[in-house]
View (cartoon, rainbow, N blue to C red):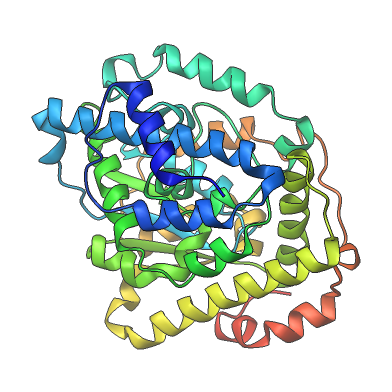
Length: 373
């Protein structure tokens, strides 16, 4: 088992810093360290060390720059839905609007010192991040669009609170995942708020566009942190989603050197996301007063005509879509053609599933949101 106190001491020694800031994070760190398997301890230790150092630097910056803590995060727009339901390309498309701001991959890889608007295109951290991304296998980039200047997920931010499924993506951590899916996510969203303030202090735009499928598990904590949040809720046939997601997770495990039981992995992933959707549907049912904060977006409509779907989305959330935003989005779509890094091949049967079994399991979700199958 990894020793969280030693890891924290090592991070303090590496940075020369000792202010861990708020919110509290050691319970998540302890759960993570306790859950690791011996054969993957070194890999996870490296990941944890990086997050601990980033956290120390983040709160050192917060103390050094009074501009950070006074930032107001107003009406952020969150893309939420099953993984593999178009959330990544939609996030990138909405982020292309010059009025919008998203946490970019390079900013989350190395957030300190706070990014500046005047060096948003030239910061040397951009090249460093892109170099690291290009070292990843082309097959992985075929599964999930990546780039230093593309927006990254909130999961990456929440690693600094040690409440993130990113830790479990490349390895089996069943005890940690079980704890995570039912833990209090308030500390993670508090850290998320601090990071947005950090990024906004010297590079501000009109609104934030954010994304993370795991927000399905914690819409209550999301609205507690951001009472004026707006949600784009994506919907896609679960029979397409579940094997695609299982294939991605299996590849990450194999890339990390782990053996994969595909049938067991498929069962666990489907059960996990079933729980997430149950929780999200229950939240929406229990909070009808928030109905106008949600825009339900059908994947089939989106892939049929992305810009027409975005027009409806903007109208539904009372956002003006100007010419400059249209042009930026059209350019991004032209540059983001599907399959440019290769094809993502998989089948439901590889993961112990079938189209019928998946649709039967998610029949209530399909009916509730009129999901095309």
